[in-house]
Image (tube, rainbow, N blue to C red; front, side):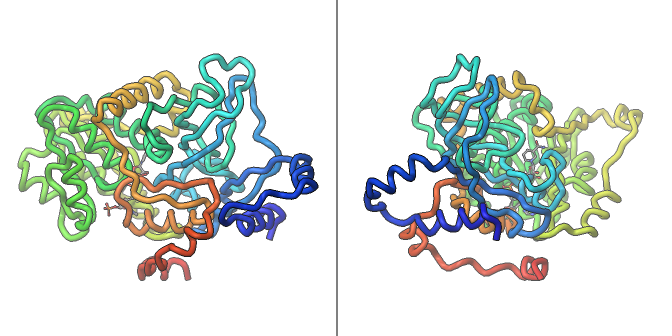
Length: 401
Ligand SMILES: NC(=O)c1ccc[n+]([C@@H]2O[C@H](COP(=O)([O-])OP(=O)(O)OC[C@H]3O[C@@H](n4cnc5c(N)ncnc54)[C@H](OP(=O)(O)O)[C@@H]3O)[C@@H](O)[C@H]2O)c1
């Protein structure tokens, strides 16, 4: 066990109920000790155990234009599952702290920061490194939280809603009476996309998801929920809409991108933005990678012209230097939140020490909405009340062995 892990364990053991006031000598000692903060670190590529809780000493360094954020909640993204397996190229190699979004309170301002105040509550979008109790980020990567928004809701917004917004409205040019196929419709991006579709008049949403989630997604704006696990979703869409759809959001990749393209009406657009088909369990699957590569969609400019359809690629991770584009999407989203037109759905919250369980929930396709990580240590009484752990699927057991 490393010194940092030992410190983390010691800190976990110290947590529990309201501590009795420390004696004076101990208080003095605490004042002399350097500050510490908890963080999650990806220590290597592989299974759930590769993300470890550690404690860092000191404070994150504030550069010019940075702000120091006391993090209250962080978002878990599908990309974090891929990064753990070494399948996400926007995360530097391990050891590294993942985390692209969080919410929290400003504790200090770096030189030159004018537009923020200590005590401001903010949402944060940053390339990586946010799964920490304290983070230093450029002020223009933070957005003020509106009144009434919880920290959990705030951490559920940046990645999912900005992606869904830019894909539907900037690339997709979604207009009244059009139709959209949303895959992974019960996940973070999927739920955001369905809510955003509802802001446009008479949009038909086809949403694929596991059957147990259909009631929830139908209430959330999906017109036709399709169980892709027991049915051929292409046939189901064609039965309901023989001409196809105007927009497909494609987070799957491989052969599903070709299916998406084929399902488009003339003038339709596919926006490809993920490679979820690569993930078949907690560890990297070389066969799935080979299959994905073999089935990669490709089209010549001439065929594209003749088909009169559009193909776009979207990756928020590559827009990290485009602050204005991202900020403009975020301000529209916060306006929609204020009008009650979008509402993040938090599926579940896990403390940092439970990050493996959080990842497993998403990997085993059990989440409906956003999975949130909390930097604050888990309290003892919570641990006692906790439900027994869910059974691992056969697939997971096989992969872990
Ligand atoms: N390019 C970008 O900028 C960008 C930004 C955000 C997200 N994304 C992509 O968008 C997709 C959704 O991301 P998210 O963060 O919102 O995650 P999410 O949808 O919450 O992911 C979990 C859900 O996806 C479904 N799923 C489908 N295939 C799966 C698989 N192979 N393994 C596990 N679950 C699978 C499962 O639900 P059902 O069984 O009910 O379908 C599962 O509950 C991912 O492909 C992600 O990489 C891309």
